[in-house]
Amino acid sequence: MKKIGILSILIASFMFLTISVDAQNGKKLEPIPNLTETQKADIQKIRESHKKEAKPLREEIKELNKKHNELMKTYPADMTAINDNLKKGADKKLNLVTKTAKMHQDVKALLDDDQRKWYNENRLIPKRKGKQKGNK
Image (tube, rainbow, N blue to C red):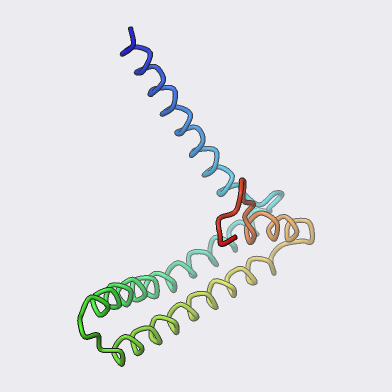
C-alpha cells in the first residue's frame, strides 16, 4: 500500500514538473501580437541571419572556455596564456552581444509602438518569478 502511495506521488510530481516546464517554454516563445505577414517574414529573415552570424561566435567562445579550463588546471599556471585567452574570449563575447543588440534593434524597427512596447516588456527583459538569487 505504501509503495502505491509513493508511486502515485512520484507520478503526480513528474506530471506537475512537465506541465510547469511546458508553461515556461510557452511563455518564452509567445509571439509578438498583431504582426502582419510582412513583419513576420522580415523578422524571420533577421533572426535567421543572426543565428548564422552568432553560431560560429558561440562555438569559438565554447572552445576558448575549454582552453581556459585546461590552462587553469596546469601548475604552475602560464598567466600570460590565461590572460591572452581571457582577452580573446571577452572580445568574442562583446562581438556576440553587439550582434544580438543589433538584431533586437532591427526587429524593433519593424514594429509599431504597441508591438515595440510588448517586445521590450516580454522579450528583452524576461519576467522572473520568485526570489532573485545573489549575494545578500
